[in-house]
Amino acid sequence: QSVAQWIRILEIGDKTNNLVGYLMLLQIDVIKALINLLEANTDVERLVTCKHVYTIIHDLKVQGLFKVIARSIKEIPEEILAEAYQTELRNGMKNVNKYLISEKDAKCVRNNIDAHKSSSFTEQIAAYRQCDFANSLISMFAIKQLIDIIQEAVKVARNNILELSKKY
Image (cartoon, rainbow, N blue to C red; front, side):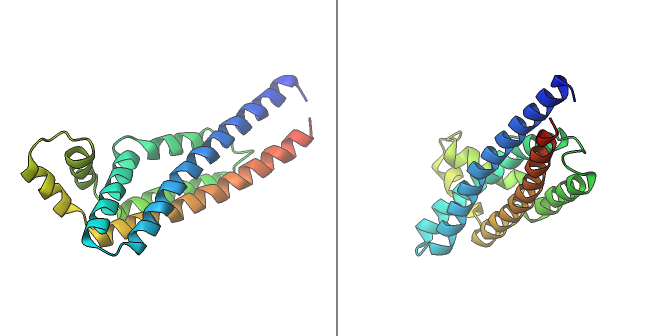
């Protein structure tokens, strides 16, 4: 086997490891938000946590983090991650999107509260009123399930990379 093939496997492994790290950071954020939602005892705690959930959704949808994940997975060759896994991941992302807070609501809450793009107290209070506890909880559980699916596929890819590396 050639050096070029070995380098290609190492590069794929590096990209896969970067995806794992990225997902781990996202998972920490999602799990912490879930814990905070479940442990919230007051309306203020619920609102602050819901606001954070809306910001996570904003980053996933508006800032394109879903696209980053999809692109990273698409770059993994079929010899390392079978098409069946890639199809399952694409379907999982589409399915999760159905359960997420709308992009419009996430953007409104994030821009009016976290980004302070509005100096209007009335607009900020209206944005807080958009924060929905149940939808926040559903969204975080859906994202956590998607991360679990992606991590399982990445685990398969990393095992396949290891097996291929043994051939060189």
